[in-house]
Image (cartoon, rainbow, N blue to C red; front, side, top):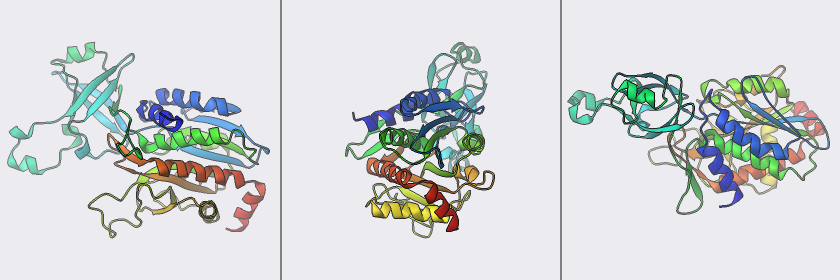
Length: 361
């Protein structure tokens, strides 16, 4: 297995739902520290590492969120079943019969998400989507005491159980938490590639927490970094699957057609001169790219770009099929081209670039 796949496997298989990011933070810290000059963790839990080039300024914040969508145990029924609440956005229809890991203080317990069997549903019930409050986690217990003896208690985090895989064609990967562990892995590789390059700026790699529940880590970490410019690395919905027509999405994003540059989402309109610089950089270096316009959703850039007097910000990501699901699908070419694009971009940005961007507003 090559280095990229090793990194992707390590970061996607690690647990780390919103508010419970400690396991993935430790892995990312170990991966990033060898390539950084300093590091810290802010009071909310976001990891911040720095790499100074030939100049201390401008300060470029490259952010990706380390939390994944998951669940939290709320109570245990008398029969031993686990009730839970979602952490981040889930569509109930993708949850039934999926395996999950309940993370206790000292071990992982495998369970399955269940609901009332269709065999005993009324005809009317069968026609209705299953509601979140009807679901439960079954760990094989027959009583509350038995579940408690496993060490499970209210407040324990729950993550999807989904081992990392490379598809048969060798071009795509299948994994949980690609939103946004793919972005975290890209930041790791960007720091590795830039180790021997004398860029005229200081790079801050920021692994934010609690993005899936309100962009909270971005709001605190931007106050620590105080960046001059920000690149948010995230994933977006791949719209190349059956059943999606041109009238349902503003732009189509395909696996294997290149990284995606965000032109609009519900949380941010990017800095236009910076957006144009990204496009120019891609074209000058023959890096394929796609454009995204999304009416809903947002990224950490939504908080970062309005810090103090404003931070020129842009989102660069990759399309992923089935995000906010137990397993997503991403293309390795998109991943590598996104890393290449961001590295090329960072190499060109200095104080003169920043002044020019401001003058072009």
